Length: 184
Ligand SMILES: [Zn+2]
Image (tube, rainbow, N blue to C red; front, side):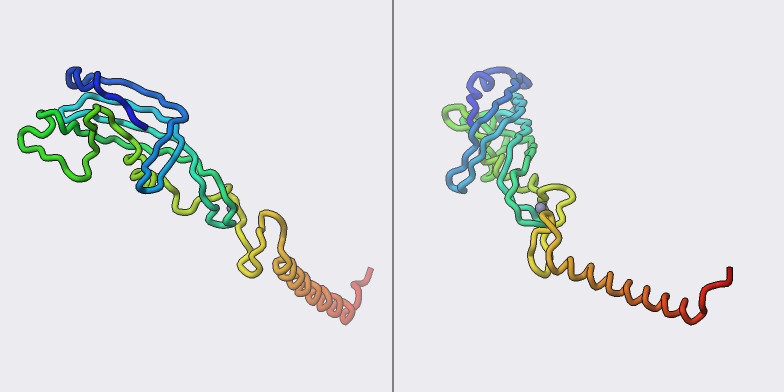
């Protein structure tokens, strides 16, 4: 997602713009990172370049942490970053150096949000994505998807429980026989 900030750079500090790109490609080819996103962007002319406040929405492919089903995860990636205009003497004046991890405005006065989206995505991803909040996961014994049906080993466990109840019922019956029924 590349934005031409040529006009904004020629305006006074504090000048600003809002952009709402929809269905734009964000791409960092070196990292194999490619997303189609929509965004709310607020750009402000800052002393060193342009301050970007971004809220970026998109879906990523993930696997449910419980049942391993593939899911489309809706992400919101938010960040505030200053993009430094290295060709502006003001950006590097008064001892302010450009760090290796600074985001830069290129020589065409374009800024590219792709790398920032890639970096901030890591903190937006949930540790345990779920296909739905009450996903029942897989049976630890047989691996059956418990969202689909009870698996055979679960059913077996239920039978055992009924078995225990059966024994209890038998004991109660025996006790009753021994004491006989209460007189009417
Ligand atoms: Zn699931």
